[in-house]
Image (cartoon, rainbow, N blue to C red; front, side, top):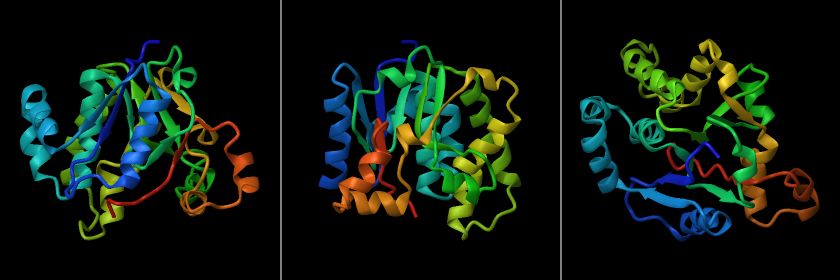
Length: 231
């Protein structure tokens, strides 16, 4: 496997991670015991940036929202170390090796309803990503973020649109559509890594019908539970 066997997750906020998120992050350890698991907190993230991306620190610290820092940090971590980045509100159901075999970079697709909302036939998320170190797509994308943020004509108070369009999935998808070497990028079907939308995920977690969700989850390796803590 080309992608390093490292699972990265981020929890920079205070207070400490709740049992809900601890339980979810533990699923990645138990289902993938041969992977190194790194939980990035405020301290080790700061040290990582100082040691590896000190030139990015002024930009990083001047970002308007913490979630923008979380976005940028995940890209820089994958550039440096490679591996898999997955949000803390993700449950791992099965070992993930098979979906990343022989890949150099991969993004999980969001459910179809979100693609339609964004007027596209598919929509890349940044909540499940995997890459070799120093993949040019991520290097070029992060450089573009730095260039584009001062030019974005969206009210910063419109947090959802501003974040999505500066460091989040809207920015990611715009760059992907313009990227020339798409053949090097693997897109993982939503039924494998994001089979439920936010409403379904909440119902599933609260004990919704096994009959309904057993069909939706039959091919799933993981479930995004859409906790939405950043909003």
